[in-house]
Image 1 (tube, helix red, strand yellow):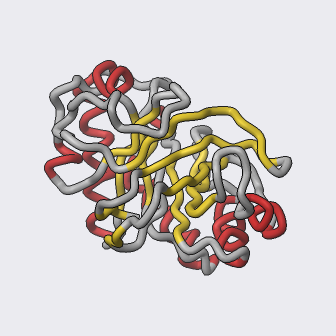
Image 2 (cartoon, helix red, strand yellow; image 1 turned 45 degrees about the vertical axis):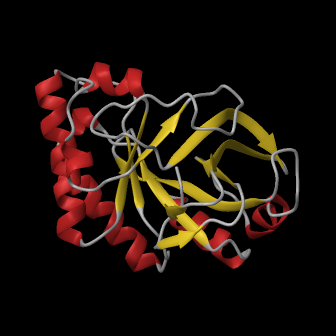
Image 3 (cartoon, one colour; image 1 turned 90 degrees about the horizontal axis):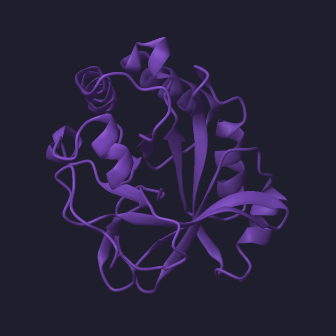
Length: 219
């Protein structure tokens, strides 16, 4: 996932993390120091849980990242498909973040294999999320990969891409490179790659993400 606010020129390879637990300001300050994967420059925090509720620590985690000086901070929604009301999940998340004063760049909709239904029902659910985000005036993107997308909605289904949503894809190959990406879902080029999962740095459980230098990227 990448953090997002605007389109800016990347001047070097940029490393970020996504987190699903509470992270303090001091822990984020530690993550900003150069480590094995480089200094963290963007953060994506979980802000909605698959159990069907707004993440109780997501807003504060975003605020802590900002307080630590991390400029680009996003959130991701892990939706509860069985709960229904996809639009309500998006609006509840946005309302909570705004009322909490959590200044986020964009929201990523986490589309991975977890209690989904038929492809047609899944398409309708995701479309509802996309449309609600547009209605609320937020920037949004999709977190997934080819296998998840093909299983959940069909590899050729391209509604989010057709609405301008970028893709953040997962492939834990340890390589900070887009050379492994193959087009699907209407995306010919990715926005961010999650290339290392379930790591620990500064005592924090993180996944590592990356986007390349020398081109404009949505952050």
